[in-house]
Image (cartoon, rainbow, N blue to C red; front, side, top):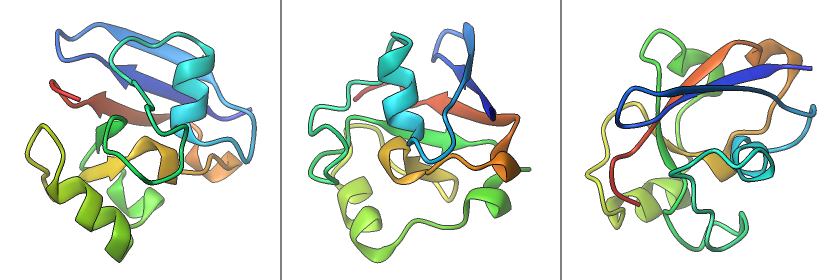
Length: 106
């Protein structure tokens, strides 16, 4: 199973194992990672799972799609080039060791 390390805004880390095919948001909610709200349940209708992909790993997740970028523009925390919505990152074995920093405000 691929692992994800979620880094909270205060620096606390939460390392969890994700089921292949599950989204990073689903995984965070399943394990009670604080700061990932996932208000829309992964329907790409909010930005309450805004994360920053480690800059050295952004190539592994790929860029945000157009509609995802639009949702990020309305996020509580301003997006960066490494911003993604965790609901749009589907876990695969290639993403093992992914590090996602949770946006300070959802």
